[in-house]
Length: 434
Image (cartoon, helix red, strand yellow):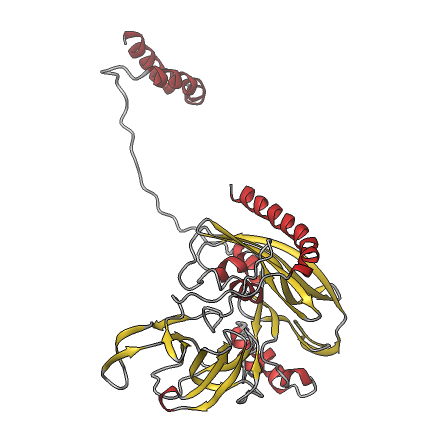
């Protein structure tokens, strides 16, 4: 302690005479003293603290990179869509592009939007259109925008098919995960449709679920113009794996099967909409918002925007397609002998739908509306067995037939390499997450 006091006094005297040299010498020495600890009663000069506030200019260096970023979106054409409706859903905020496309009469495709097909657009962060692609049969509509404005051309599409593989983990939603992985919305919709018999995407999805997918993309001149079919997929929901392989058992006829040949399709889909929310469930006691009285609700109400596509939940024959009292516009499909499905409050029917027409599972038969006793746009769906309503979310659905014996060898030859690729994707995704 005595040595420390003498050494500190010596430094103070030395600093008064040689301030610069003292500073260089004292710093390492003081470091040693601090390391050893400051002795009690050591005399230290009080330090004065002064707060200085200065305004620093913000340099917007990130703005340029954000402005240069581009975003790719795909939208499915809905019944009654105009080009302005599509641009709005594609988040295009470009008056010049909107005016040009809205009044461009030379491009037949712009005024011949086929429901169910997709439009792909690339935009900047602020919504300016970079390019737009729409494949109409064998014709490609291409819109390219730059500093000089937008140019529109139509040409015969020369498509190149490529098979891609990707995987992702669910953080918030299926669409959020596919966006993060660079997958189009049509792939997300196909995934939900493929596994809809085993996974209820309204209620069963959990954070941490994972999926892997092998799918087609069609290119024109090296540029992706639309997504194709999902060829194989695996979805791990709450720790339980589900897998699917597309198998064409006859020309232009096929379906999805598990790797062991089990048909993934039940004879009935759980829901007739791709994505929606349940606004009113199956119950024996519900207060009717229009009739203002309590009564049974022997069906499921799915809230969705007007014009949303409604699909047949099973192969069947149209029994009713018309106006029916409180149901509004109603479709009734008869399946085999004892099953019927009811679709009410529709805004309209699919083109060519009529009594007696045969429809396939997943085929679009109508569009969500608010006709009849409805307070807003939604679909009222009923599942009946022997003309008695059953809860479609709880009733055991009959199984669809598996791969036939004569097709097993061909299916195994197709499924084996796809299963190996899904396994590789699974381990790659897990390694990336770790």
